[in-house]
Amino acid sequence: MDHQDVKQAASNASDHPALEAAARVGYATSGLLHLLIGWITLQVAFGGGGGGKNADQSGALASLAGNGAGKAALWVGVVGFLGLAIWQVADAVVGHPGDDKDAWGGRAKAGGKAVVYLALAWSAFQFARGKSSNSRSQSVDFTAKLLDKPGGRALVVVIGLAIVGIGVYHVYKGAKKKFLQDLQDHPGTWATRAGQVGYIAKGVALVIVGFLFCAAGVHKQAKEASGLDGALKSLRDQPFGPALLVVMAIGFAAFGLYSFSRAKHAKV
Image 1 (cartoon, one colour):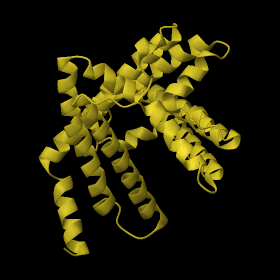
Image 2 (spheres, helix red, strand yellow; image 1 turned 30 degrees about the horizontal axis):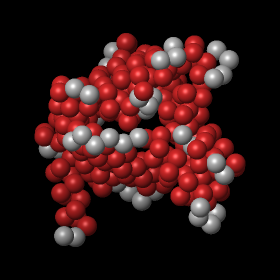
Image 3 (spheres, one colour; image 1 turned 60 degrees about the horizontal axis):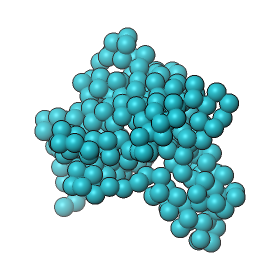
């Protein structure tokens, strides 16, 4: 199969109604996960420890895996996240024509999103079949392996700075309503407000996660790179920590509500 055949196959896939439906299901599942992360964060804010669950994606997936309806939702989520991953791959292949900087940047962004959605599909699949994982532990283990490599400390700091950059972009995307460019039509006032609050909250959380990675590299302490769960729980110990966590919980819930609207209005 030559390059032209690959582009044609990707174009056909991106326009297929089944893939479009799966991608929209993926956005809706993401919305559900963010609502659950918001709920766990609220529990952490009031000293409940999140009910023993991490305030991150693994905690949200574990919440769903705890009952039959939740497990069914996880299987639906697997299909949705796979649909989103395939759609992003197709977008990387045919959605950014040309050889300029913007075209290559668009391809790289779509490819990165495809990796994220594949990872989500795999995590949902593991929880759906009864096998759990822990995002916080995985982050610490990954960082520990990097720190043992030559130049590992610098690489961990670079990863941290990259995450900070992504977080700042999320804040900018929310504040300037740039996320509306991802949609085929206007979702309405309330969905737009939810998107603004949600993107800003996610951005702030990612900035904290990035700084924790940087600290892990500087101090050569892998346990400091504790992911979203560690970032949110570190907020709890700050002045006005519980109030800050309530604000973050509202932000995650807002992003979840926006994701439901995105499932309907997204360009797919």
